[in-house]
Length: 345
Image (spheres, rainbow, N blue to C red):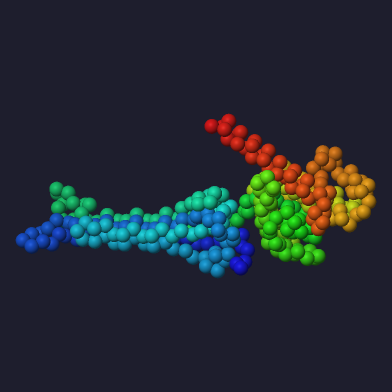
């Protein structure tokens, strides 16, 4: 299985255009035939294509130089040189492409099959047949092909999911993902079990489904590179709904954990706090007293309490109610987006 790689810097070079040809027609009984040099072929482009079968940028981890084919030179008898073949590089859906030097975003490949030309091939040069005039009937000049574009680009993968799980290490995110989907993330009772994002598809009895992303556990300071979280925070930027997964066994500390997580998201990207969200108080199977659970819920601000779901990812208690709340919210967001699109037309 290939290693999960979500960032890469690569060099791309489009093909050069082929040179035009200097040639003259050679026929029997025609000692001084006219110019018949053909044009050179165009160089191939370097194209990125979003491929749903590709899930990581691992292919660009070891190989970083990519070059499209040059156009072939023109030939006699006004024959155009063959165009160079385009080089198509397949990347995961959700890949953001930037110019490495300027940081300019060149494209965002969010749709399967979507393409982006990142280096345009050079144009083929004109052959001497193109330069013939009534005054200059035997030109001995032809154009050189133009060079293809070249640049360093940055590839940055941002997973596309409906729900993003956010929480500290050992909060039970991976266990929850394995409970509600067919995903099989590594699970163990120590921090940073999850070393890469995991995706799972949640299927409902009614036939609906949605995608959940389990992001490696955050720690305080994650927005500035502490721990593992900084490398993966970008993956929740595309999610429609955030689900904060908190360890209820920490009792009075659980509210502080929630506040720290929200602050880390704010410092990374303030717009993350504008997303719809729910809160899962996990591991209620370890607390026998229902009143104790209710007291912990009451520690949260009143506006957050309707969004709180006490659950046990291990036993499944409360998980079904959470799944359907997420599903309803996702549908609500999708319907609102569709209305905005229709109104904007």
